[in-house]
Image (cartoon, rainbow, N blue to C red; front, side, top):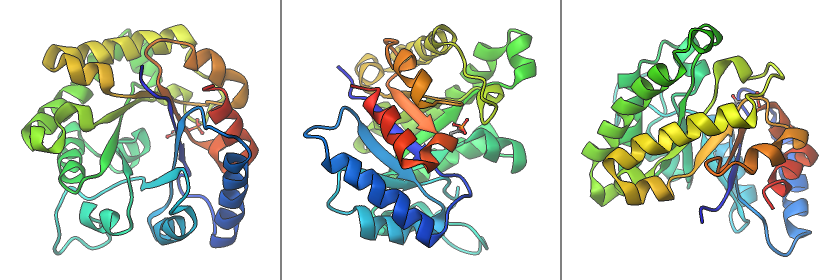
Length: 257
Ligand code: 13P
């Protein structure tokens, strides 16, 4: 049985003060229950990773980044390397988010390089895949997502079993048309894609396919989380807007129980 994982993607939001109050509310809610029904993490903007480390160390909430460089080190102004993220004890890093793909021209190949660096630094990449509305309407979702995943699986296998191979990944299906739009994929649409992704993993490694958590992302809210989590291949959520409100975020975590 895979444990559920709920990850907040704060995107480019927050201040030191707002983060402190959000996290203290999240921690209070965690302390109020004897056992959390899911693993929890927040992916913060890079400048706040030290704050996350300070406030969340010794808590059940893990933290991570929203992107990582495709290079190890050197003259790459503005970039943050996987080793730097490890330096702040990040467990996770989101890779290939649709906003990075759309606004920063990230190709499948670049995403795959980032995955390799993340794995090499001992981070768990949360690899995002998803189709646009036009692709969805043209019935191309599986072809697009399959192509996005293929390169990443190859890269993870090349990174080697020493680094956990495919089992070291977390996947996230985020249909672009559902992000920040209030439109969620129906649980069945999401389940079908998740089953497709797990099938792709299983073609390469059946044990890993059984282990890898596949998250759904796109307008996940307290009132739709439970029906999504009831699907056999939906192992949690990557939450944007609702992760900025502690009560909503924790209600989504609670829906995993
Ligand atoms: P929303 O939950 O705001 O739709 O964002 C989803 C997302 O992009 C998470 O990575």
